[in-house]
Image 1: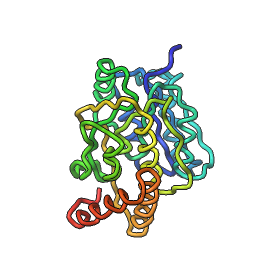
Image 2: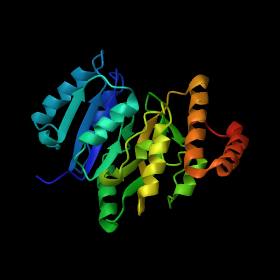
Image 3: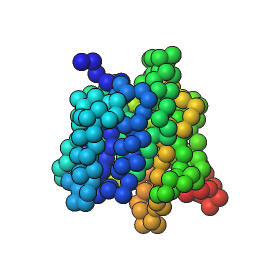
Image 4: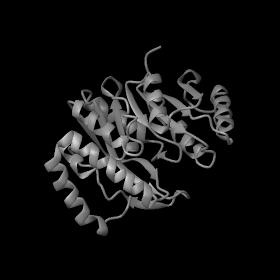
Length: 258
């Protein structure tokens, strides 16, 4: 059997409140040449029961995905980025797409639209689009204040993570592993590394994901700023990083915090 076009990966831990909507957004895609991999961090709530229930429904052909293309594990990990590395290692698809518990593929047509765009530009190594921000009740809050550029280059990432992590697909052969030294902002480092390796990036003019925000505590916000500063300095150097942070800090009071 040929490899699936894309591996959609969900990371879960005690996610019983939000996992089901994520799974349904994946399983109800009109384009079905994908695999779905769930990496659970040994949840103690009903998360695994939910996964098992959908596994049974997939076996009973309630959804179009082949049972062979649905896999999951539940075991202890060293945090979300360790779990995401497990997902990358297990993935068999041509592209990798993270859709973690609580987030959703924006609509049932999205994967088909991505695939159709790729057929016209099949040398692309990154495919990306926009994200719609929603609250835990799935009520839209608007686009991210960082809008994905139509032409994505490494230099764009001096402005921060301009492409939402849930709206970027990376070809597995260039997909790096996450740096576990970063606890909050390793996704930013990961995207910069991927864009640095990619020879061709393909923009899809649509929302690819609904990204759920629950707000960030001031403590985590400070940690994230420190990590992003370190990541930026590593990739771009000290002076460009200082200038970029100055611009961000000037604009920060006037921007939405998502």
